[in-house]
Image 1 (tube, rainbow, N blue to C red):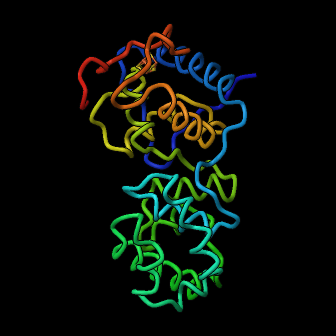
Image 2: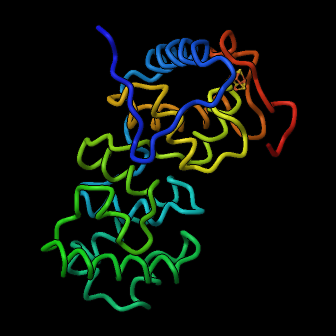
Length: 235
Ligand code: SF4
């Protein structure tokens, strides 16, 4: 069966010299990563779309592990979006301080909660167009929420792991914007894989292809990886 490939809004193409080779390699990469991570899941803990949105906002410039440490107490204290909408700035700051940038994050969470209550009857909206109108929610976070909470693959969340690994693998050029990387990866990979591919690449980036010490000799992708930029730390 022919797999349908498409690009998120804004179009996109690989821009690589030999697109056929790149598509073929992307198939191999997907097959290997799928075997390596057969059951990929979000790395942030949540029990509702609002909790995932909160965790995603908190994860900016912070590790998922740290966010997962503080969210149980946060959601015990403020169990619903309406509780966040009514909360005070200092109250939220005190609960999220260890995630860094806590003043901005608290302001964004309260503002997003108020808009969800006022404009969406307390329900997190289910479209990219609506999600990016919420304070603190850009395209990457919206993709995380759409895929993780609703199972919707409207695009692919591009974080540092996805950007670094896809460039090392020669799927995209180094230095592209996150939106451009997303457009190019969404052309290369089937839509049904977009969300799960993000989870797989994050796990793979942590365990094998890390920023500082990629484990190339042990890497299951070594045979299809040109290792672009690996010898130049900081790329
Ligand atoms: S071979 Fe090296 S650079 Fe390529 S994906 Fe594996 S760890 Fe990363």
